[in-house]
Amino acid sequence: MSSDRHTPTKDPPDHPSSSSNHHKQPLPPQPQQPLSRYESQKRRDWNTFVQYLKSQNPPLMMSQFDYTHVLSFLRYLDQFGKTKVHHQACVFFGQPDPPGPCTCPLKQAWGSLDALIGRLRAAYEEHGGGSPDTNPFANGSIRVHLREVRESQAKARGIPYRKKKRRKTKNEVVVVKKDVANSSTPNQSFT
Image (cartoon, rainbow, N blue to C red; front, side, top):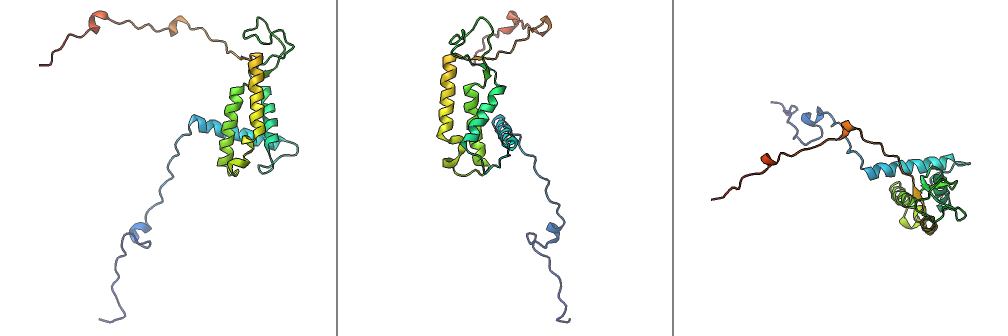
């Protein structure tokens, strides 16, 4: 036999040029777990804030905003609020359940704003916003604003919007009767 010829050897199975690995198809991407309610809300809040920045004149980039823009965003959100906050001049100021309507504004509830800021603070850090020390959502002015909102709503006894409850029809009421005679079990002895 000639020394020019050599018999081919099989590559080990873990070698990259191995025929067994060469014909493998890439694995399809695994479906992602559905986001938790918190993660979904955080993503929705972040997208709303980014859209708000883009709607400013001139539009703001993510690297350009600071705590003043966060404060203006919170004030902007008040127009979508459902909590009645009475002015000091209102005859219903301080009454938890006023007997009639008034022209006082609806605003965002303090608890909603506080939770929103918490989610946006986390989203900012997840989107590469930098250190927690420079996070505009964690700025002291934001905390002061939230404290003022909480105190003013507590004084005014803001009334949350109450959705009217739909009355149940007779068909929706389910009555469960228990057969007393068949529900008892005889005493069993374990001997």
